Length: 265
Image 1 (cartoon, rainbow, N blue to C red):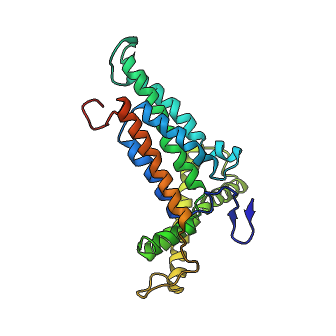
Image 2 (image 1 turned 45 degrees about the vertical axis):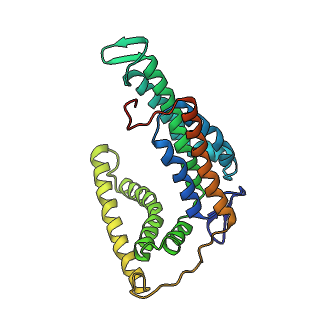
Image 3 (image 1 turned 60 degrees about the vertical axis):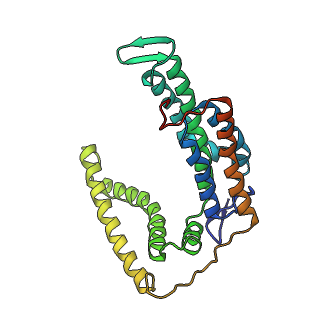
């Protein structure tokens, strides 16, 4: 459901209304430690601990599967690739040309598949619930990033949705003129160039309008909405930090830790 006053998707999950900066920090805290190792234990433990986080994000079942479909496809594909071409160790089960399936490549394939899900799922789910305007407010007001850069990036993101509408309008216009029925490759390049020209013109107009309204001035600027951070945002970040901590601790304790820069990687 979209709020008619703010044009935002209204979600009921307890994580959905949290600060955009807290969600960004939570996604980074989960992902960065897991990048340091490739083992099935840490990835599996992290994925198991992330289940409550995913359920509380406020996404409906259909939206969740739609948003994360790429990950569910990429995980098994990456596992197949690693199983066929990964480092060989232990018993070799299959070999043909450059393809070689062994105990080591299968273990690495399983760890890679689970690792893709453990890192990607929370990042996708948390970022889906982030409103770009809230993120810009947090970055400028809390991280003290340059307001000119933040507001400009926000304006550019808001304009991305218009590109699809422009593409459809160009296709309909060319079809009405009778030039869209042959030469698909040539037509695609022509439409891409026209879309590029439209984007430049719209960006120039947007920059002029923003400058006329005082964006990018030398003085301190005001904000329409104050960035908010409360105890629940801190709790979200703390819980996100617990997930990789527990996962890595279990991996080290069981001897499954495989540092990607170490000799065993």
